[in-house]
Image (cartoon, rainbow, N blue to C red):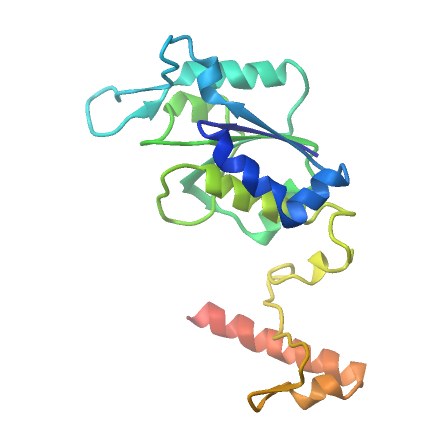
Length: 221
């Protein structure tokens, strides 16, 4: 998979992709990630990429021209499966969406800023809009990290245990059961006896029951 991220702050992203699972995926050559500074596509000598909104109002808006130039340059070199804009106004990222996006070969991610982007970008250049939650952030960079992490870990060969991602919460619209590790007793807080029994059939049944209980609780909260 190749991911191209268009951003005003590539330095904010670079360190985030040098840790944990994402770094492992890059080193295994399962994914390539490239950052593109939107200011490099400004025709303005001050590298301006934003302007006041037509019709008045507060805040600044990212202009269409530098975004168009950047996306066009990338598309001239390869085909892209999705051009994604991260915005709180979109459908919220869930496991089903992450699974679908993890199967893509090439994607572009556009990080918004200020009051947003010129609507014509959304109308004519973007193929998928994604939200990580119904709240506003200063920019789309942190959302891009969240989105990328959620899909990269699903690429075959990235995780050490291939079945690990399949057992994640939400894969079947079910929350994962409680998990424990050593020691079996700490501060007199004990691991459930069933998990120490060695009876795998009973353990799986217990996990199924606990998953259902957690799922019902979250849906009712």
